[in-house]
Image 1 (cartoon, helix red, strand yellow):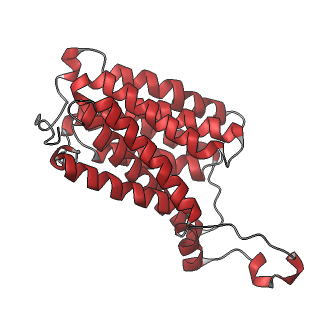
Image 2: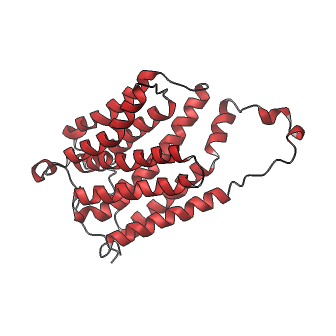
Image 3: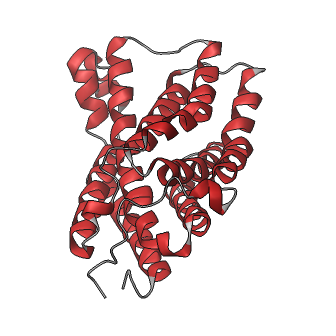
Length: 267
């Protein structure tokens, strides 16, 4: 199916991710509290140290991304695309193209950092790392490779749309709509620059690094009234424009591309 109907395959994988979302949330049911006065004092105190890190990692979000990684690995092995997922040395001369997402992440730090301690910083970094690795393995490792015969622009557009749809569907039922729209825009628009970097560097590692650095900066930084609209503009429309710029013509695209051009063994 990946070879004959790549778009259908990608849609089915995205639907499977919604199923994994439901499973991860069911695994962490929210127990209602009958009488708040009966709760011990410790229940009102946030965990600290290793307890804080363990508490943040034991969540539906981390479980979902862990299951997503497992799904991606199984499908990459099943389709015979594991060697072409991007776990190889990048094209060194094109690593300089990472400057724009790294610059936007650094700009987010200009307003300062808001964290409740070193343990919170570590837990945030670990959660971001798991989520970014899973997202890139799925969308720029598996699905992007399946869609690569469409060309880099077509693969970039569809994988970005699917990533945005996943974020929209997962957050629409829980978070407030302004936050859902913001996260969806970041996922959809960010997909353009991450997919373009995937093509131009011929590797997943630079993409994971750039994405993790930017996502971590957004999570821990304090965006003021001036920096917030600038960072949001650059990380949405700016990312789309930069991604398309990196793929602007055939001559420019010639120095990137796939490390191998074998078709998947699954028909």
